[in-house]
Image 1 (cartoon, one colour):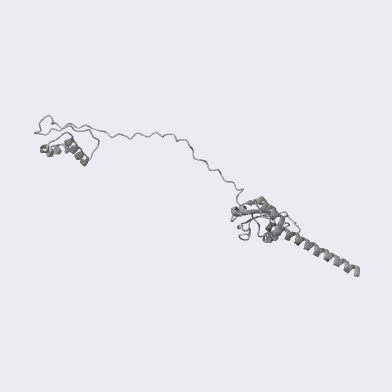
Image 2 (image 1 turned 30 degrees about the horizontal axis):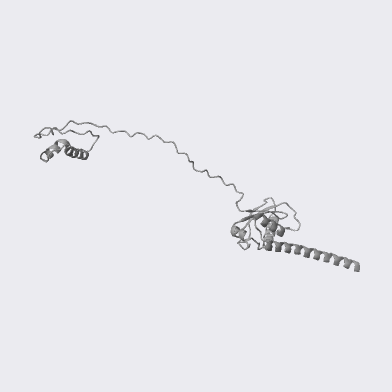
Length: 230
């Protein structure tokens, strides 16, 4: 009986020592992640991978989880992780188990430590964290692997000159000169200028222009205008 009790005590002590060692290792990794400043995305991945592993004690199924999280310049998360992908062909229980494990691991490892240069450029930028059943696999900047179609540059070549169609020319006609009774030569007759289709107002304007052009005297102006506009 004494020997059995001693054996059970030894098992209990070994279990406590193993748990203490595991907690100490996790605590040391978390402390290293928060104290050693990261200067780049790969260094963030290294620090987080050491801190969050293992996600669960006994990985029992292959799984892939993608989470998006942002940080401020002090390395603190801007909110809980947003899960954008979880392997679909696993049970809801396992999905929840790994989601909770990721959330707990990230909370345990916060805040991260950034160098001043990295803090200034990464604050507010979403990071994509990719996990499998063992732990963190990759960290990348959000949308960094998305395909962006190249925008073609504007062409420097001048486009070919398109021929300009000629406008149809209106038909013109030449009316006979106008004889003004009582008007002496050589002013008489008064020539008529060629013109196209015209309204009565256009015709009157043309007659007035012709009277000034060919020097119709004022004494014959009214008579000339009557003959020209009829």
